[in-house]
Amino acid sequence: MINSIKAKAAISSADGKFSIKEIEVFPPKAGEVLVKIMAAGLCHTDYDSLSWKTPLILGHEGAGIVEAVGENVKSVKPGDKVILNWSMPCGCCFQCNTGNQNVCENNSPVTSGEQYNGFPLSGGHVPLERTLFNGEGMIRSFNLGTLSTHTVVKEEAVVKFDVEIPFASASIIGCGVVTGYGSAVNVAQVKPGSSVVVIGTGGVGLNVIQGARIAGADKIIAVDVNPSRLEMAKQFGATHIFQTPKEDVDLAEAKKHVFGLTEGRGADYAFECTAIPALGAAPLNLIRNAGMAIQVSGIDDTIPFDMKLFQFDKVYVNPLYGKCVPQIDFPILLNLYKKKSLLLDEMVTKTYALEELGLAFDDMHAGKIAKGVIVF
Image (cartoon, rainbow, N blue to C red; front, side, top):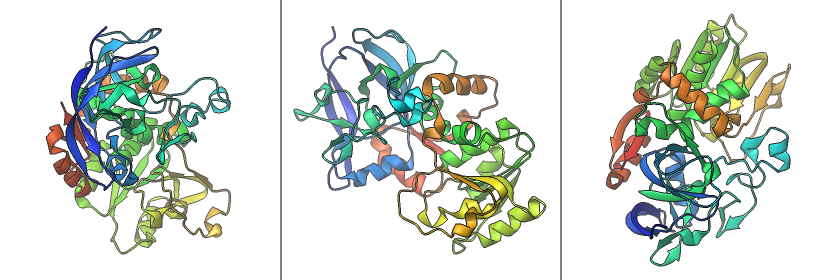
């Protein structure tokens, strides 16, 4: 049995700031895995977690190497390369038994009801004493805390891989890639020859575009306010781009553009990927009758809706995690990467040291990068 490890991690504080500190990580117990994190992807949720007013170890995308396993762990062994995920189905609750593992009632840090100082926990978290900071047990964001040189997680949180892929590229699969791709392929089930609109071309939006391209969509229309992000969108599969004015919150100009490209009826599918409350209803306004609108970004606000937007058989869906099951979908994504269909190396615009986390957040907010990754 290994002794505790002195590790380094990004830790948030109750006042909305973060610092890089030394922590102590203890060996895994039954059903747990100790992972040496090699790379951790960044997204807006990592920055948003600074406002959750609970000290925690940041990060929820990551890839690394298994250093030790606890009793009864069968899927991985020391030395295995793994991608981490926060959507860990328990396999026995009502939702898991009905095929909705992504909204597991017991393990999901989003849908479960367990709380610690106002922060959602679940059956997917390991006991707090497995990670200590100044002698106190620490919460790991989304039960992972990947902005740390080491983490202890449940066995269900890791998926082994053997494909030749840089750890930086593998790390982003665990949330942003699988959410975007899954929203297009698993949720919308985009059909070959169809038309797709993607509102917002950040990390998740770009992967919706990739999913739509892989599914065989004929027209993929990217809408954003940032011209450099729209250029990125073309690289990942957008066939048309439209730079919308910031002041046009109703996307009236974008609607003219979309309808002009779709014989005046609207797109078959539209995806909202900005997390801007004012755009929550926007995808409904861009689809045809009997089309599908998908709210990918997870808007939590109360927003008004014009019920006329729902008329004539339009469908509006707000999925979680692209309705993906990591043990099934991660291998699919890795195989698509191997075949050069899924672009991941190109999506990692810039890598940073852990001490450069503040700069990485600044670049993300400025729209300079598709995905930033912390490399240890």
